[in-house]
Length: 152
Image (cartoon, rainbow, N blue to C red):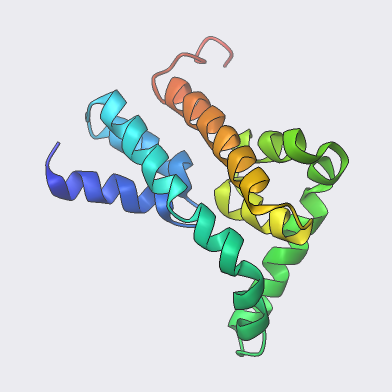
């Protein structure tokens, strides 16, 4: 895998919406080494966690006043708040579960929003999000390799 491909996987995994749920299947479909793709996707998806946990509330307050961006942020936060009942109910393990489900809107970015809204301590939130992300990475990798094809 060349350096550009590595950066591509890393950046896709770090991006909101797509995250490692898109980076892993793309890397595997391109024929890259599964372990390299898995590691780069984990690294890329880990990169935004701490900045989000530290600065999300501040950024929300600053950007809510910006036309368009504020509306999008409010919609996103409201959506995550509605979906995060499991996090509220089960705390740490609820956050792990929320992030680990490989569906749109339940990854690292939304998990960071949920942790911020529910005022998790930073270290606790980071570890819960990281564990959930690792579980999601395993599930997405296995699905990308066709391990779950017997279900369909």
